[in-house]
Image (spheres, rainbow, N blue to C red):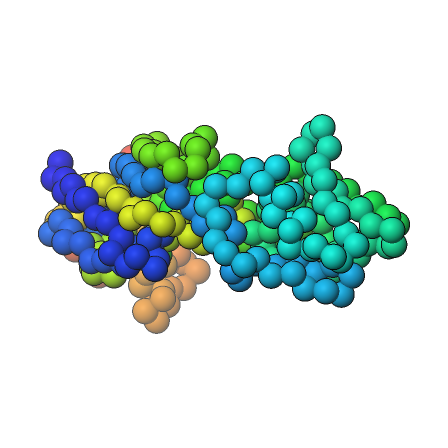
Length: 301
């Protein structure tokens, strides 16, 4: 089987999680495409200057980018950010973060990355409490536990959230078992897709998290791609070789129906004679060399 192997990488330092390219494919109509591996460094921007949290109607913006955060460092940073606000931040023995104040505490808005870290992903804002507000979940500090490589030519994958479904075309799944600033080498064992070879002129890859948000990488991403040609006779199940269709076998009643649809009319006597004597076919039909399935039956006198 004809196969093609490629190594491609991201080339835009502002979007290392994206690869837009074109690939030369086999000289067939269809081929199978598999991402055999993905390699990069786990240098994710987990918080940046677009992130914020709004507490008690005051918006606090993150002032710098972070790629390696844990519970203790996040709590320390938030306390410095909210200094003189009367709000203090702590974490309990389970690493859940909570806010304390002498008054009511209301979190009315929060950016996506900060919601991941605070354990507010499944919480509908606003939330409030008197003097102490506990975030219900332990935060995620290096994106979500599963990452996906999305592709415009990938197979459809669905994410459920309550009763709603979101679809994305996926070509690879990465189990997030890596550590910040360490290499990621992931082999693909789940996703192979069949594509038209002509579509390989525009292929777009994007690394996303389990909630279908694009991650931000500070290191280039490398992919190895394998294309396997599909013979044209297999790619289209309706395509048949010339003269490969067996001859159509029709009985007298089928010929009769065919001729009737063309306007041929028979009297009741003619119909009875044809059905009782299958070998006694009208001249227009006899030329088809019909072979009766049963022995002729003599007409009763």
